[in-house]
Image 1 (cartoon, protein in one colour):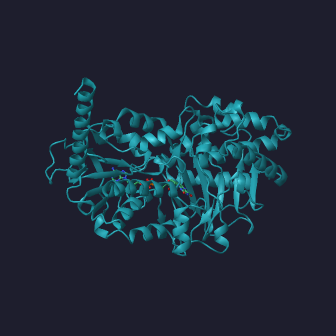
Image 2 (cartoon, helix red, strand yellow; image 1 turned 90 degrees about the vertical axis):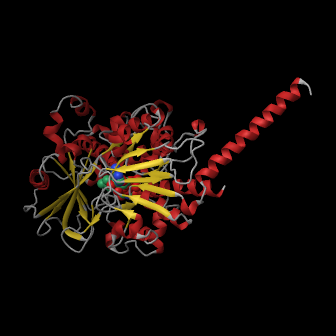
Image 3 (cartoon, rainbow, N blue to C red; image 1 turned 180 degrees about the vertical axis):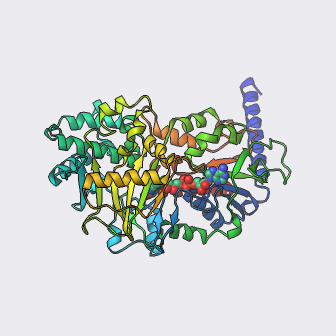
Length: 524
Ligand SMILES: Cc1cc2nc3c(=O)[nH]c(=O)nc-3n(C[C@H](O)[C@H](O)[C@H](O)COP(=O)(O)OP(=O)(O)OC[C@H]3O[C@@H](n4cnc5c(N)ncnc54)[C@H](O)[C@@H]3O)c2cc1C
């Protein structure tokens, strides 16, 4: 045999050894098949429940969901605080119909709202109705024609960003800078009323993006978000979002979900090549109370906010640099709802909401720049409230929306103080006889230790696709998996979805994606 032949033979033997090792490694992990694979799911939001139900449906018998809160659902929180009618403290609508798995479930199970309450939307520039009353701070109604023209213009401009049709010169700008330039060039922008409504539009867009300001998010990255056909606001019936959670829970035995079980540490890579006894598991999860669980695979679905706060200490060994960077780079913004309940309504019957328009609002470029440093913005936190919409099934309630650092600051105030400010705002803007508030329900998603925010956004200068993918990639990383058990720690959750981040369906699909990853691992 010549030299070349010998090299070839050695290579063949090496590749045989490699294949055998790979097989042995996999066989060790899978010594008893998927029915005995121990899978832990951390978190019981849509991502966690979708993962658990899909695995159980596929024949995985040892699946346990560990949930920190006393309830399931995470950022979906349907409550009945005061009457038999529900309030959604978190997610409210199903965004899009075609290709939306949650819309499909809701439709099939008859969970959607028909009737007039189905029409109850949050007031966004593209959904302003004649029944939305706009007032400026002097208490004057803003002419409807101005509102309509500015909102239509604003929607066209944001559509360009979502549809990836931005001019080259705008691609590197923040969304705020792009909009200012494009809107500033129009005749419309020359009137004061129009400029003030434009500021309102930007404030509302912050709610949609969960960012503190449009001057902090990327214009071109918006096109990575895919809007599904069939309307942005699909409303659920009297059971609310909880009814969809209940459908998923039907497939998950009650003993497979453990609430009040906050996870403190995820130790992984505990079993190396050659240590393949059946009882060895590569991952160990330790709860706050010291209870320990062993697993072959852990699917982590905690929010990006929780990862931002705990990722460095929660995992042992620490997460790879790329994943830590993604956690750091992506933004996790705050959107809060302020529900005000009155003894009786004081607004006209046709009113869908009161929208607040300022002379100098927080989304005016100059105001934004002036207030970017220091703490002065705290004095005018309430100017970040977009307005107060009427609430489905609660004819005497209004819901205010607030985002960003102002939303977080508001969380530090007492309910009474917030309600007084809101009543003052409503009185001074509308001039209507606004009575005292009888009850309030105010969300505090930023201070919630198990969530730490509302949903994900892509800050200026960040490559969203790369960051979402880095967040989603399982451990150990493929290129460094030699001699280590595969798919030890997997990641799901709204923030890990490249196209549907921010949404419930994004969360659900991400959970299914990780379940499928394990299913195909065991069936290959
Ligand atoms: C105010 C608001 C309005 C929204 N409106 C809409 C809307 O209209 N439509 C829409 O599609 N989306 C909306 N969303 C977004 C939507 O709610 C989320 O995208 C989705 O619910 C996220 O699901 P998830 O499973 O990824 O995360 P989560 O729901 O956050 O689930 C993660 C779970 O992990 C648990 N957890 C955290 N830490 C630990 C730990 N250490 N140990 C164990 N468990 C832990 C949490 O308690 C939580 O239950 C809204 C969100 C908010 C806050």
